[in-house]
Length: 209
Image 1 (cartoon, helix red, strand yellow):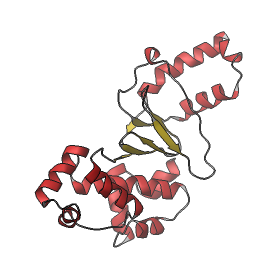
Image 2 (cartoon, rainbow, N blue to C red):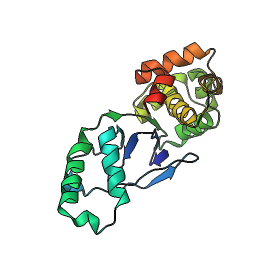
Image 3 (cartoon, one colour):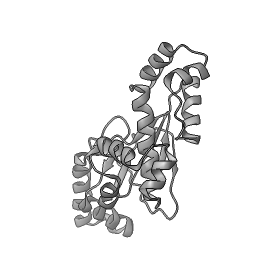
Image 4 (cartoon, rainbow, N blue to C red):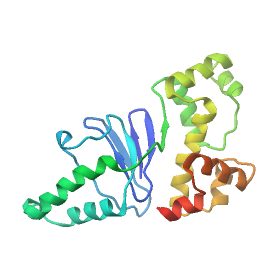
């Protein structure tokens, strides 16, 4: 699942969940053959972040959600189901958080660059070249990226590569295909980038999910 919330694009891998606080407009884009559940929490019943995040869902929490989704509304009123629901309220905030997002920015200039990179993630233009594209100085452009995203340009582009690589790997593309799609000089360079960002090689990360 890819989810667009305000000025950010989020990737939700298998065995993960996307937490969206109340009142935020969003758009969900499931990949082919995806199956998923929407779980709605009463804000007063649980302590979850004020901002969006991806949660790495444990097998136990996953099975709890699937079980609750499979029963009727009447069945949820039973005492044992109330116990299960209360346990889910308790456990969800404890799930590990992952920042699998790409900030799009509300600034029209930076959003233009973001859309270019989304259309062609292999685009390797330098900071200087992107600054020239926007008719800005290199220094002004660098400051704009940090101000709008909280990242340097290199970190921002790497975050996009993480989001796209997860999407493509989950859909069945090989590591080599993804590496070429993102414009890396070698597969090993792509694997090194991925491992530094997520702590596992692409194959190990996908097999875990």
